[in-house]
Image 1 (cartoon, rainbow, N blue to C red):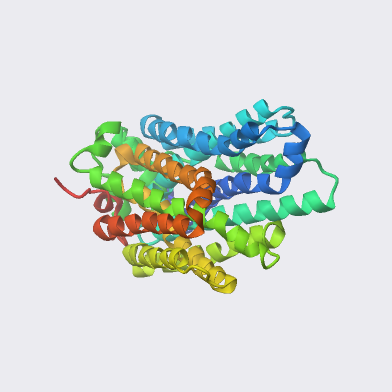
Image 2: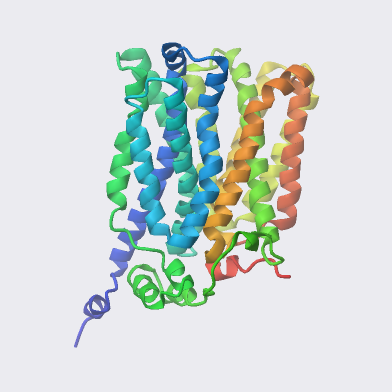
Length: 446
């Protein structure tokens, strides 16, 4: 008589331990990709002054270098999402990391502003594609009981990558003779390790089923998914091609509106308040340098860690809606409290950063849950692109707002954006805790 283990082996199914190891591996390479995203965006800060002087950049070129990655994300997110839905998660998951490796390596030899802009733009495309394929792929393999925590880990990785890059870049700039090209190029090591680590990963069983490759879907589901219920849920997938227009259909327009504008409203005040906070920290000798760059991210990171710990225990809505209302009130107080003492403004900002990071964590969870498989990639990509518009507004319009409206007026605008997000989430944010992807992606109905 065959043992359970022998019967599983005969069917090509991994043991419970094997499935757990696979999920850990998939989570590790996904988390690694988000760590790399944060690293690439964080490493340029400590070398910016040296880089700008060495290349003799004009003001326009400086702006383009700063904007290149953002523009790349804006382009890469929807294109990557479309490709992930049409050609599969696995090919894009490898392709975008290959682009990371190439673009990272090119940083060692850039010798002009034009090439630097192109390289940073390529990295932005890779980051956008990573958003569009990573979260859908992870959500399609993760069991419902762990899905929130696993997806939330990616935000911990992003903040950690940014902090690690800033700290390493600062130390290497201040205490070694390494040039800025070499410091920027350190991301090549991370990208190379992740590319090799992703070799041999399977295709999503949900995507396989959705495109009609049912036998392959069953084999992958049986081998890697945790339970019979997870395998059965794959067979509830519709077999139909996804289109961009489905995002705005009667069934899914609310999902598209919620995810896109929730993400937009979460990141826009963050970029605005982060710029304002730096001037506050300078009065304490913390602006810029290692303490300023790492310390502020550490406060936000603590909010993300708490959210990841709670998300599969208390649910999504309680971590999405109340923190946005609190952030709105805090920003309004900063805007209305003329002549507030620096310590009070600093305290308010730190509290805002904590709560903003809490609901920002859900920007990495909801996209993979509320869209069906056939548009999960393009839905995530579209929402990511909309969020980058918000990031652009926060980054590029803030100086003009500070000059024309002052600090108070600027913070009230940020409060208005946070209020819009809070109202929208109060109306549309779904509770997806413990539900299968078939249930979470059912839409809001006609």
